[in-house]
Image (cartoon, rainbow, N blue to C red):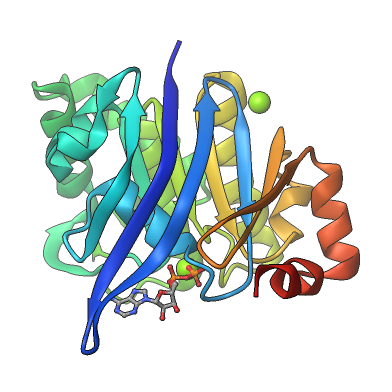
Length: 252
Ligand code: ADP
Ligand code: MG
Ligand code: MG
């Protein structure tokens, strides 16, 4: 059993006018096999939450805790977080010129497992994963994210997710910039991870569209740096019909 537990998390960023508090007390608990959707308007702090869990140096945790299976995530380096089983798919994946997708995946797998994967099974696993994501085998020879379309970037993120096999995945706007075919392929990948492998997923999104393909067990409305309301999938339907207005007004 794995659990990611976020408790009363407060996070600030440094600005020209001094520190600015972005997260104002976030509490969430994500267990094995649970998919949680975080939905909120732009600027509400969703990416800040993802970066804070990942350990991005720009974000300072001023109070609160994050634990993975009882271990203090905030005490861990970025690498240690990945080795502990946390996976973060960024809203804006970075380009790594000169590093091929194949090398990148193998290096990441080796770092996380503490040993290199056996070459024969690894190549088979990579090819099978790329194929399921509708990516040509030659995709492996391309430089990471360089010249990738929006869809290729997100498919590559899901390839990492499937191959690195973390305990909990945090997916930040994995649906942004995807056409309907890519959205389906990416969603199927997330479902293979969460349902078939019974893993925890924190799915951050602005739009309800992806929730037609990935069925959340819990939906959290995120406004002004915290969870304004939590419910089941029906909450996403309500947001689709009425938007965030009601929650934004209540937050000011
Ligand atoms: P979301 O992902 O929900 O759109 P973000 O987490 O990206 O929201 O941003 C939340 C708020 O924090 C925004 O008002 C944004 O301008 C501010 N913010 C985020 N990162 C920084 C930063 N590095 N410096 C200054 N402000 C930031
Ligand atoms: Mg499930
Ligand atoms: Mg964001």
